[in-house]
Image 1 (spheres, one colour):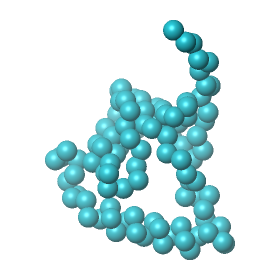
Image 2: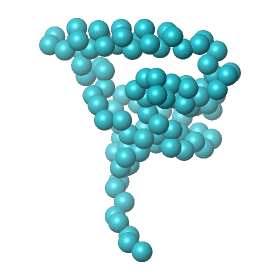
Image 3: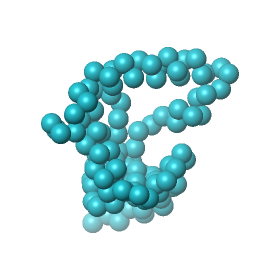
Image 4: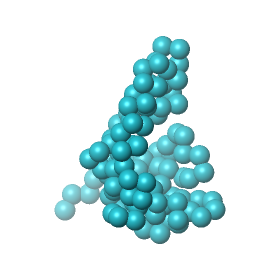
Length: 111
């Protein structure tokens, strides 16, 4: 049995009201604040429903108050809002929005 050293968790930027940490190839999000469990359940449902349609993280595990997803390589959108990159970033967001608008509004009740 090989015991590999565990990577320490790394705090994720732009986590806002939730505690998000990356450990290796996963991200663990501990929900906090009002209606945390309901928001987590809706987020998990949305991620599962959008998988394969939009570039969203794959759900790895879900426990009450903690959602674990695969890490998605990339740059947070807020960091792309520079003079040089904003136009391209906003065009990409527009294309993603158009694709998102094809998802049934009641997707969470039919998954």
